[in-house]
Length: 282
Image (tube, rainbow, N blue to C red):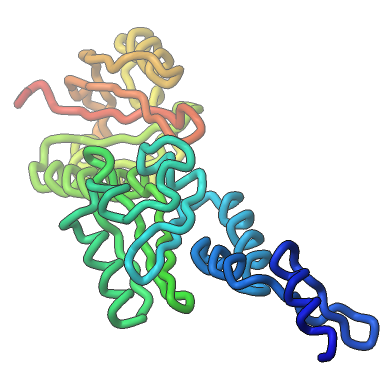
């Protein structure tokens, strides 16, 4: 205590470490230096932890934005800049509305402000304001006086679900139509799935047709052209339209108009889809 005036003078030029039993326990700094730390958003013992959290966020695959209670962005990781289509480090230190004017008035801003007011986490799948026909999974939650926003692009998932709905609707419509046969063939040319109208067309139940080589149902005269078209489509070629004859359970030939299209999956070709209509009504 007797040396405090000298220590105070030293602290105005450089931080002075204060020890207790040989271990540093405090740091004495000038008031100007301390105010500068506060203005930079730091606090004693907190800056190192914040830097570690920022480094962790930069390795995440999701976009991360951290803002204060005034929605001033303190940190945004590289994914956030990519999803928001902004140059690197252009979001840090700017107000939310200024840095991302596309969000103004959208549901993303509504969820962010709701979390600020209520301190309750929020999550929703929302249209992206940064790209047309794009969707984001948007999450917000509070950390102390700050708000964390995490979001990622889910456009492919949304598109996949929408396509699935369209596919189911088409299958139901064809089944209700009654004269459009549906066949899904594997890469080996065997039948994976058929619908009711196709079974009725041949007079055979579905369990008799599953895993049967599709080419075995084609008459001898139509087989070469049908096999060539099916092989071409399974290898990823363009859709084909062909006339053929199928053998029914009664032994009679059923003349059809067939459309063959390649079936693409996430890892390449998965076979083909064939639609058939009897020529008597085609």
